[in-house]
Structures are given as C-alpha cells and as structure tokens.
Length: 233
Image 1 (cartoon, rainbow, N blue to C red):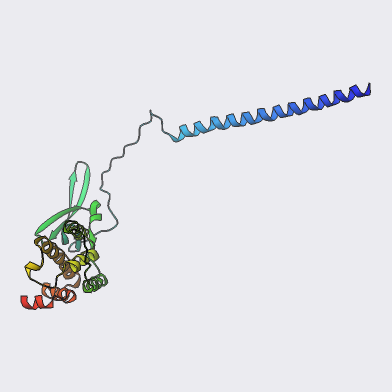
Image 2 (cartoon, rainbow, N blue to C red; image 1 turned 135 degrees about the vertical axis):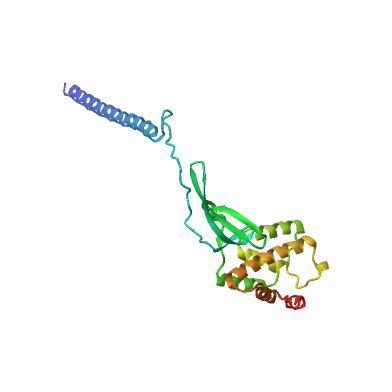
C-alpha cells in the first residue's frame, strides 16, 4: 500500500511542472504577438498615408549664400577668368525676387549676369601669398608627358576652366617653351598657352595692382622668358 502513494505523489509533481511550462509558453507567445502588432503600427505612423497631401510652401525670396560681394570687387568666373562687379540688380520672375551680379570681363569684352544664389561658381581673387606660390610654380621644371596631344590638350583645357589658380600656373609652366618661335609650338599648343598665360596675368594684375607690363616682366622672369620680353620692347 505505501508504494502506491509514492507513485501518486510523483504524478502530481509532473502535472504541476507541465502546467507551469504551458503558462510560461503562453506568456511568451502573448509578448511576441504584442511586439509584432506594435511594429506595424510604428511603421504606419512613420509613413504618411496616401490621403495625406504634402504641404507646398511658396518661395517668394531667392535663397542666398553666405558669401556676399560688393560693387567694384574683383571675382573669378572659371570659364572666363577675372571680372569686376559693375552692378547688383534685382528682377522679379513670377513671384520670385532674384538678385544678380553684373560682371565685366575686360579681356573678353564680356558682361556676365550671375544670380546671387548661384555664386558658388564665383571665387574671390587670390591673396598675395597665393600669387607668390604661383611664381614659385612657374620657376619649376615643366612636366613632360608621353601621352597623345589630344588627351593632354583636353586636360590642359579642363585645368584652365577650373578656376583654380595653381592649376592655371601649372598649365603655363608645362606649355612654356622659353621661345617665341612659332615653329617650336603647334597652333593648338600655342593657343592654350596664350589663354592660360593671359588668365593668370589678369589675376596677377588685379591682386598686385600693377601695370600689365610689370606683371608680364615678373611672369617672364619666373618662366625664363626674359629674352622674349626684352625683344618685344
């Protein structure tokens, strides 16, 4: 008889353990289901509904950049070189008020109209320290490349139109032949050299505030073209 009582007790313990396990599993299932329900709600809140229309704000004033240039300031436009701001004007296109600069490029006898909100294309003229660095670049030896001229010409043209003064000085240095004899240079090579030389010269003039003759002497001395400038005189 006492043996049978022990069996009954073990059965009761097993049943209680099973009930506890099932309760834990149910709780875990309820938590997981609650999380899965909560996530799509958050997604729905983050994504605007199809019925909701975005707000359209009318821009009545033109957004401006931090840099502001004044009248008679010299600036550099990459594709045309150094220019002078002759006027700051306003115009109304539709409901938008637009301000723009009038820039005179004397070398090309050209007047540019540049909106103030697109002045990222412009840059101020270089400092005296940058001019001195350009002079040191002109004094270095030219880099001789073995690639085809058409590819080199494209690279030189990109550097000239980049608006970066150091790249401009490199083109002048690399295309300099220390001679004025036309036979020593191809027509396209000479054209690119003259274009880069005049762009650099015009910026030297604006920064140093000296005459074109004095600037030319300074550049020719750095390039070793002193004989050419003396013959020209």
